[in-house]
Image 1 (tube, rainbow, N blue to C red):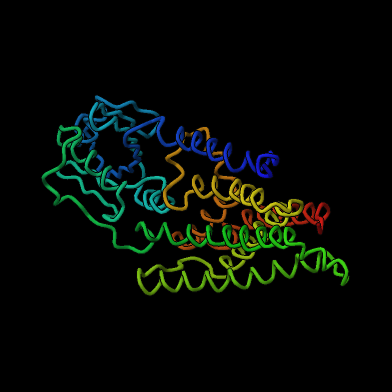
Image 2: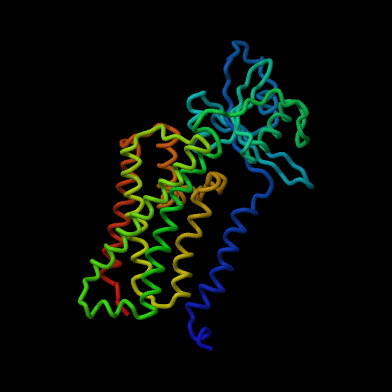
Length: 355
């Protein structure tokens, strides 16, 4: 009866999971089948415009062309429809697109033979290769027998693990701050430990800064361990600026520390607190591109996703790790994250209650 009398508990424990299932179900099932984006690099440009490679010839006849890209939907009732988007671009831009996760395969399209460059450990890239190579051969959804055209990626920054590690570093900041700060405050308030500190007396700002400092120290140690593991075991490297990476790491901690203070500033119910924390971290963990590119989501959602704090941290980390970005490339994201954290902290400090 005590649980039922608490409407917020019912919402976060029953209604919110249903809403999350509904939202994620729409995001991942409304299109169905395979969604893949590939980059086409035309190394040899023919003077005779009528002479085309097999893949370009097929796309010119069967795909919908918009600007410099081709889109084609391959129908199959049993395997599901497959939507492929081919973007014609240069080599340098193709590598940038694959490092950002915007494409999964680079096709070196030549009149005699086409080479497919991708990471074999990436399941999405393998599926895209199978479909694209069969299109070039005049087939559709069968598996290719000849795999001599595969050129696996071995360059640091182009593998799936190079995409994953920066995303995990960003997610670690979010999860550690959210649970290490928010839940700690809520739990201590529920056990009436915070009200004891009022009698000391202690300033609210002193307590909050102490929690933030402790959590930042732990986050730094955890991030170093994850990076060292990725460096020794997978050969992950930082190709960009270390100072820029440090500034961005600090800005990310400020952002999520401030958000965590705001989230935990009022409630003393741990179940409500769990719901509030999950309402912040779960959507971003799914849509911000930690494990897979968020460009798989519908185009109308991308402007919103790109401005989520976790997305800004993950994208900026990847640009420093894989693209050689410096401070001038990520200062805007660092500034926005710092402002988000500072404003959230100020509001949280104003509305914070001890009990």
